[in-house]
Image (cartoon, rainbow, N blue to C red; front, side):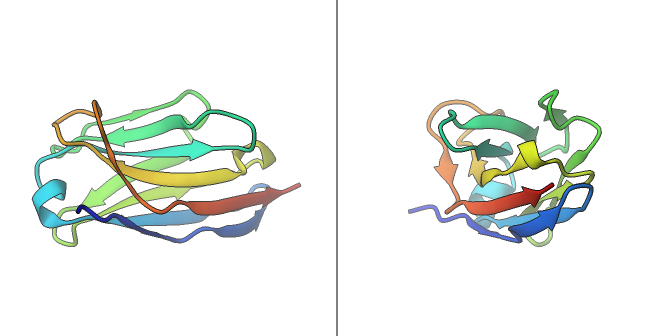
Length: 119
């Protein structure tokens, strides 16, 4: 069973910053795409950022320019640096790992971490 472990959530004021981490098994991390999703209350889970094993990134328009996804291959860890946070960023954030070189098909999930941005 593949286990992804997230850390770094919490409460922050609007305009502040947070960094999320996601540790994954090396067998997955070294070759496969990974990403960050979020789910706000009453809304579907939304893909907000992806990164391939080679380091290519993509972002949803809602976070582009404010969030940065990155990975440390030596630590098998992915990060999401979140700056200029807004109240509408409040959600449970999930990291995900693909079985492929792109985000597709059945994913492996982290446990989720709550981010609350106060106005």
